[in-house]
Length: 128
Picture 1 (tube, rainbow, N blue to C red):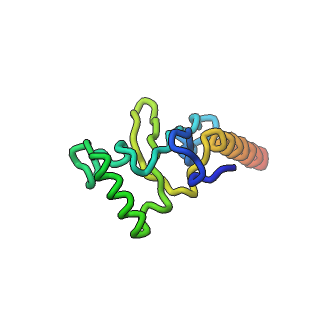
Picture 2 (spheres, rainbow, N blue to C red; picture 1 turned 120 degrees about the vertical axis):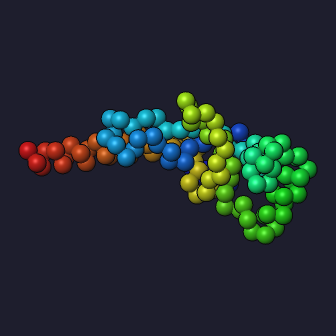
Picture 3 (tube, helix red, strand yellow; picture 1 turned 180 degrees about the horizontal axis):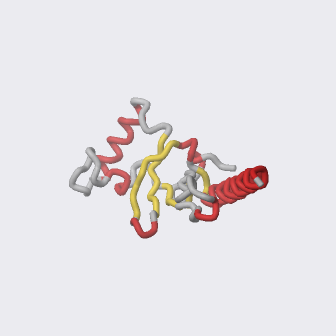
């Protein structure tokens, strides 16, 4: 499995963003998917303290990212453009360790959902 730092910008990713995973497994919705962005992608910096007007200049972004990396910042985070379906798309900076290819995230979601269903089934049978 590839780690997030080995994934190319544009890759579909997941990060255990599983809607309703705190509820009964039958209620869980498909995992949210996002697109991994480059650290210097203007969408990652739009409407932030760095660029509150929403239109950061590429040269300024490049300088800012290089300065942050030189200071040891941004090394363990990556921007992801998440598709939150009816709630729209939003960029969130994610910890590298939690970002995996979307297919891997879906497989993890499916296994966790099955595991929780089995756990609830055992619990229900133990009470009967």
